[in-house]
Length: 127
Image (cartoon, rainbow, N blue to C red; front, side, top):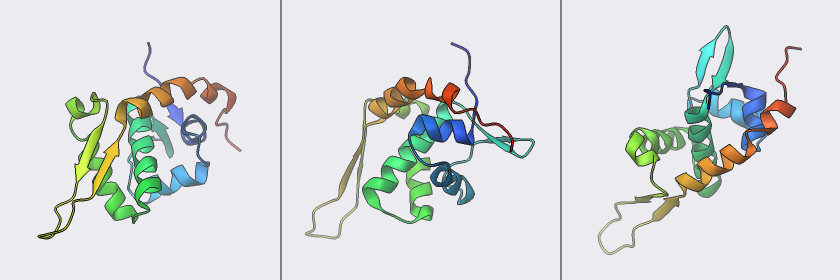
């Protein structure tokens, strides 16, 4: 399968989010897609990174700075990305229960694969 590269509008259609939401993740440094000629390009790894960031944002409702750190920590290791899920545990104070967050990496990646044909229906043409 050839390497895919999608513009922001196409990527947002594949991810099922508004282009503005994806643009905000880029603008605040949560995700860092490749940039050529003033255009952001999303490959498959970039789509997964965005999907995980959106999942964490929805689950945690956290600030973009914390969201960027979580996303980077989860996806910095390629071996970890091949797992079906990754679990984050907090370091609680003595006597408190840890907070556990399970990120279903494999199902998020499968969802991207299923929605990739939508990119052809959403051409990102210049204005």
